[in-house]
Image (cartoon, rainbow, N blue to C red):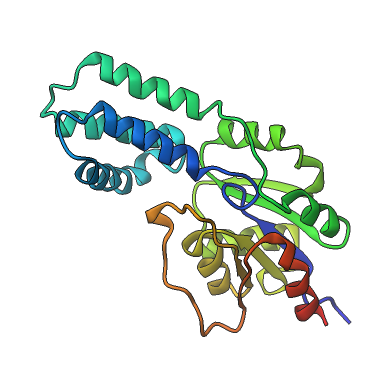
Length: 234
């Protein structure tokens, strides 16, 4: 009898290691730089608008975020932003690209427990160089059978990846902190979507919870994943 589930995909940022906290800290720094021109709430709203507008052009990741901050700074100052502020924004972006990798609790032990029992695939989006750096520094590379850094996560992408590395999305599972990117499109592809909430999640990654979907699961942390797998595989 064929296994009901053979392949598990894992998101990286804020699923296996911390990421959003560095964006939040940089946003605070950005607000301080522009404090004489607008209030923090208005600035963050305009930054988010710029990020949404720029994703199709720059993709996901720190470089696009940095360019969106520069664009927003130009916008809120009516084109009069000092060169020193632009330099500070660029420096903040470079510091984000060099931040240390801090694993989330149970990330390594969970992967070690599943390694060899399932095909494990890291499926992440964002800047290629940054994601490769974080994976190398995480020490988790050898626990994955495949690595995929994609421009976006959609049902079509999940169909392609789980066909390539497993037995199709129907026998696959995606685990991550983003309802919009990790859970909903995987369920739409016919697979299992497991949500692992993170305390800080980018507003663009929010989506309605698919409570009525039979293949939707939610866990508090990665240590609970084995119980979900035992339930599925019987």
